[in-house]
Length: 440
Image (cartoon, rainbow, N blue to C red; front, side, top):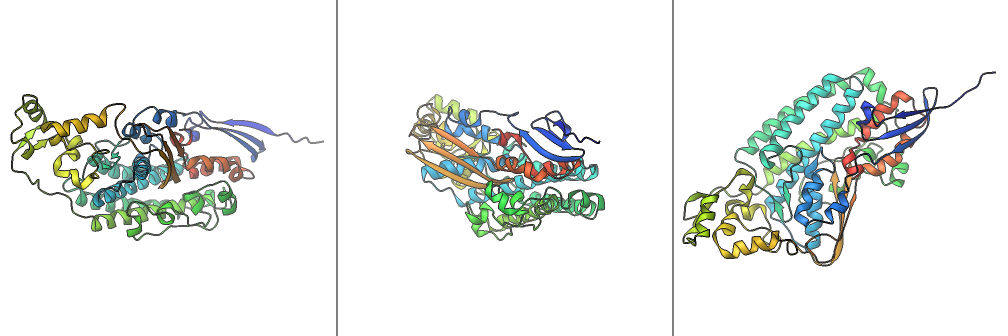
């Protein structure tokens, strides 16, 4: 008499496809998956509790490390939540800049997801092509923010710096190059019978099941639900832009691939529209004095030689350029209780120095009124929300992050059960699980 026995198999955290940050305990009947127990928590960073120990402006480096593949969207989401709590609006140009940088980040995230998933199925060339395209976009991010990954670019009340001279032309050229790569990838993958068959009717799940688990983003849209925070609850200037929300029909790995490929094209369209609609920023400084090094201005101010300093422009390090008077009004809200003064004022007059001093001193800083707020944005993986409770001090009493990866990982076993062991890799790849936002 033949006996059938189940086998338990550990996959991860030291499995290449698990990236060292997730563990799956599989119950197998031969090659067929009968049950899955998912263990998370390998990259817990105490994000929420750390944010509750520092001032609001100091939380941005922590948000960078949530979804570290598209950190600009994390920055924007947290800033918008604090601004909603404060009841302030930022300049129109700063809104466009935030959207441009967010959509660049969204494309880099999708490129990484699709490229890495293809590589894990053996399509190494596509991975290299998509990483090349991601490099084009990271060069744009680096030019504006000064960093490529942990950027800390957004500020409460605006952004750190304006777009650099000639950035728009560079961006259009990079977008054209990215589009070429997307066409190449489409030809290599979509028309590849092996790739197509590995994804078709694999990892299938219904829209009803996803909604019951609170899943959003490309994972939900692949099942036919056109929910996108940018459309359902527009923020910044998304209501002024013309873009579509791609959806699938089957809710399988192939549809999730198609949705991400289509979303990249929509994001590129959004970026182009922003460049066309964005109001002009400052071109020349309206100054009567001269351009002097920041250190020289500081020395003059220390010696009391302040005559004429208010008419001078500071020649700052590029990472501080957005804080100069030349750019200040275009990228920061006019709120002295929230926004640091222009460097010329900090260095050149006592009022500016006192304003700066108050905002950076522990126990003073940005002090929202007592209250609570929740604000969602559309992250690369779905709805990324920040819940903040203020008790009137300069640091949050409570911070809670709603990460899009978490509900997807909760429903993942239902996508895997019934499929083959070999199907684990493409299905898990379609989640685009980022442990920094999953574990927080």
